[in-house]
Length: 269
Image (cartoon, rainbow, N blue to C red; front, top):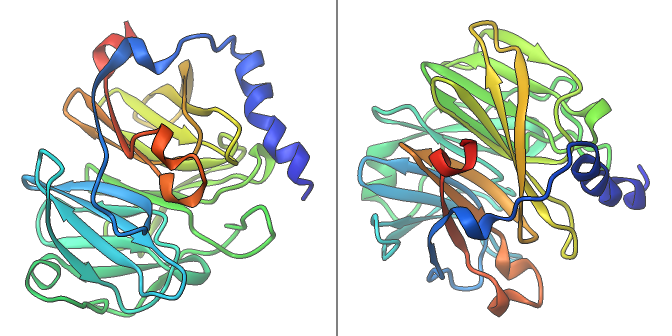
């Protein structure tokens, strides 16, 4: 797939939907994190902690665990060097992390907190059907958990982008939404809104896009706002929208923060 076409798609989306608002008017807080040159990918809240997945060339992937002020508590190495683009928590004792070749690995929370290295508590689950990235490789790019369902999908252009909704065991595909938004890096939900992060490349603006959804998961576009480049997974912590960036993957890392926290109520007003 042509990279120029992909990189232009965010600009086209902004023009089509008349995206003018910038994140600064909704900003509550921001953080630079201790990350040892790892590249951040996924974020979820676990009790009073934030779990952030990251990778680094030549090393195993990792889970950084921070407190609510984003001070590092500990780190847990994963069993391989997967891209770990998304992480989700079921609210009890299960952690889901996107793995290689369109699979999802399932981990026991207690083991992550206790040990310095963990392996999946069960065999990796293959969710790869129809999930291809922009290089035509099988890949699951993101995952999130809400109301006993797992939402996951691929990073591609709109015509090739698919959002899948599974039960929490990843055994039953509840719904498949084709032609989902371009270049999705992460999604998060509450009872009314499905929120999408999208980005591509070091020079293109990232987007937060908000959709209203109904009981059948039909989506209605509400609005989008611009963010700095390289936005990854997002997480909705009550009315705070936590936005994670893969800052260490490009040269201008000192110009931007790793975490931006936005006020959802102000955005949707």
